[in-house]
Image 1 (cartoon, protein in one colour):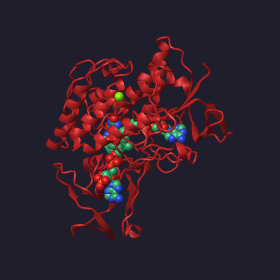
Image 2 (spheres, helix red, strand yellow):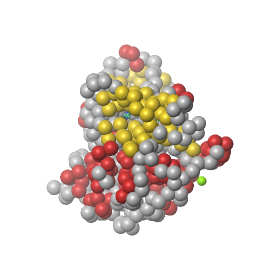
Image 3 (cartoon, rainbow, N blue to C red):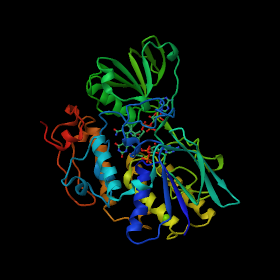
Image 4 (spheres, helix red, strand yellow):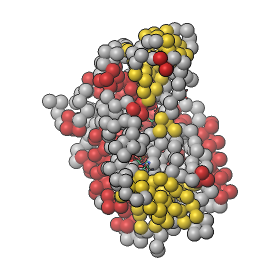
Amino acid sequence: MASRVAVIGAGPCGLAQLDAFEDAREQGAEVPEIVCFEKQGDWGGLWNYTWRTGLDEHGDPVHGSMYRYLWSNGPKECLEFADYTFDEHFGQPIPSFPPREVLYDYITGRARKRNVRRHIQFSTAVRWVSYDQAAGKFAVTVAPSDGGPGRTEPFDHVIVATGHFSTPNVPSFPGFGQFPGRIMHSHDFRDAQEFAGKRLLVIGSSYSAEDIALQARKYGAQSVTISYRTAPMGFRWPAGISEVPLLTGVDGNKAEFADGTTCEVDAIVLCTGYQHSFGFIADELRLRTPNVLYPDHLYKGVFWLDNPDLMYLGMQDQFYTFTMFDGQAWYARDYVLGRLTLPSRADMATDIAHWRGRLAECRGPSDQIDFQGDYVADLYKDVDYPSYDVDLTRAHFKAWEHDKEVSITGYRDRSFSSPCTGSVTPVHHTPWWAALDDSMATFLGDPG
Ligand code: FAD
Ligand code: NAP
Ligand code: MG
């Protein structure tokens, strides 16, 4: 077997893929050559925090969209690796909503345990992927960021794991050109303390808007006004945070909204989402999709319909994250290893249409959680990923949605049980709204 596999990106998805192959190798399978290209100097993807914004030290767009003081926004029990539990990693049960550094430690802990780092070429960006029909292989062009010569290598399979929360969607509004304060996208948001004492306007009504509004207020913003396009989030916001309809424009510091109301603001954060952006992939292989739970053209949410030797991981909108990535990675692995065969193109297209039809019927978060839970379970049923209680994770997600309705500042103080070990996790020593220090040492230790 002289087959070669390229994995592009060493974030949670790329690492899941390397783990999946390593797991098979440990069990005696003959595994092809795996080469993972990662444009950053280290692994972890978005979880690998950087202070940088704009362009990186090599002149490439900064990948990172995570910010200081970011805590898990869902219960960690819903993303627990079934082959590497939190109890195994930390040696003790830990609370359900860890800060970023703790989850980074967990993700990279599994990768360290399986010793997958040897497959990764760091500081090496993939610049172009095309398919050579005559050779029946992909051509992958990479550029080391030290400025050394680029090269093009042949691969039998390409697995794209480059994420889709890095290229911002940045609308403009009348008057922005003359606004006297700072205007930024959430991709460039790093430290909420920048807005202490300021009147902040946040645009958008999804996870980034919710979390950045709360953060900014938690770290001292004088007020936060959240402007929605389609519908308000409708949470019971703490004092100092309010929701208004869409911004129609700014006039100096004065922001004007669709309902005719106005308010003065000092800074604006556009929490208006991200674009799936794959400028390094040839046109006929490039996924084009909005942020949805079942992108079109991907069989099993993974295999490029027109050429399933090209696979995409983690391109869905995400309730489930790490465990969904694992299901996809295990599935992709078994296809590459010849353990699974795929149906005809027509049958794959029918299957995609079936899932997308079901998605169109979803009414609200509860249906969406069940939809993605079913998708994840459908992946697991064909692969040897260790079984765990997926139904419990659905119940957890639904409880979490309810907790957020009850208290948007308090939902992170709840605790959930592990779907893998059954262990019930402790409540964190400090309520999230009062916890200003997000370091791993403080989170895992006592409040001091
Ligand atoms: P990424 O983490 O984006 O990793 C992709 C990797 O590919 C990066 O390392 C990047 O450098 C590399 N790459 C990109 N292009 C190239 C190229 N051309 N060549 C080589 N390498 C390349 N999920 C949760 O479960 N819980 C949370 O609390 C949570 N919070 C989030 C907060 C924010 C602000 C954002 C934006 C997302 C959050 N997520 C959260 C979701 C997040 O998408 C996933 O947790 C996870 O990081 C996705 O993994 P990924 O591997 O698909 O992508
Ligand atoms: P998103 O979920 O795709 O939401 C994009 C938002 O932008 C929507 O509310 C959309 O409004 C709005 N929008 C888009 N274009 C607009 C326009 N022209 N004018 C006004 N509003 C516009 O993106 P996201 O909120 O950035 O979340 C991305 C990911 O990051 C999610 O997976 C989330 O879980 C994760 N995240 C996690 C945390 C955490 O706490 N750990 C924090 C932040 C983000 P419509 O509804 O009108 O379309
Ligand atoms: Mg099926």
